[in-house]
Length: 158
Image 1 (spheres, rainbow, N blue to C red):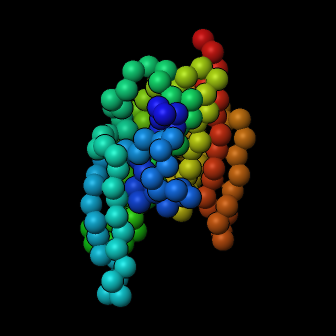
Image 2: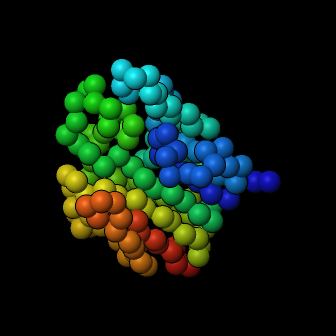
């Protein structure tokens, strides 16, 4: 079976029911294992391949479904467990996220779907949506404080 789903920055695959789902290819800029607490909990980032979501190694219009869940925070300490779990935005985060959207839509097939996840604890989702010319089809807020947004996009045919 060829992979139909692309997770461009999978991190520890926390949203996946099956972290080894054969229908998906998982990528991240890092592969690492970090001890989170003194109680022995470990976070594992184990992508199928390492890449930068700003320059995806795939041909145009390859995937029907893409998950884009980039790091959401830009102010974290170097030893932060949150940084180990989710990654940290660089000072160039605006350009990075804009390029990430561009790359996701480049490798998405016409009529394919992009699911975008964003937690707006430090950066409002409106600031993020201003970085792409594509409009979401629908979305949903979740979490205790309703700060996490799940947004669905469809790539329109040219």
